Length: 236
Image: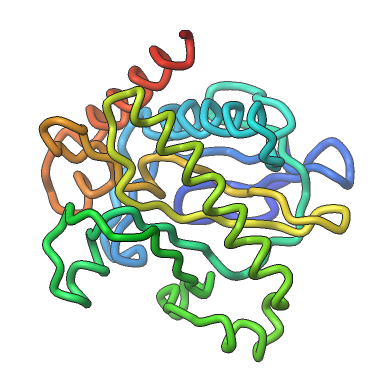
């Protein structure tokens, strides 16, 4: 049995076969509002794993280095062991969620330029927003790393927007995590409906975790639809 190193809200991290790797296991647990709302949804882990693996493969094909080494099974992947930067990068193409609430902008409003934001990766503090000078003051990352993370996030955004557009999906916003690996930054964690807002391009139907957050029902139906569409366009 693999040695569990830590367990998060949606994933379990286990020791890998060597010192340079880890095993990432996706859980069926859905959480929202910093863990205040929680429910197990059978099959969610498989869906998130499949979607994230598809997206990571696509990004790797387009020159973005990620932590993914190998898919092990339906819910597990072998990944590179990286020193996670404790700052999440949020990319927004349209107003939604907290952005809409803070600034009084109707959800779905296209933004005149892509917005990048940072949040402190700390569940106990509620992942608060943090700016560049605060990040460097706390020693979480230096200016060069912040510029690199921002540049990579925008590159990922361009690639994902192009892919999702082919799938008839509007990428509203998403968050990314990065890690230090052999002197460079690589993309880590996951990209899935848990970490993205994904709307049907025609109907604006939500196909992401907002279905769980807002009690819209058929949470996994949205995830399955995202996977189906990705598989369709990735086969082209």
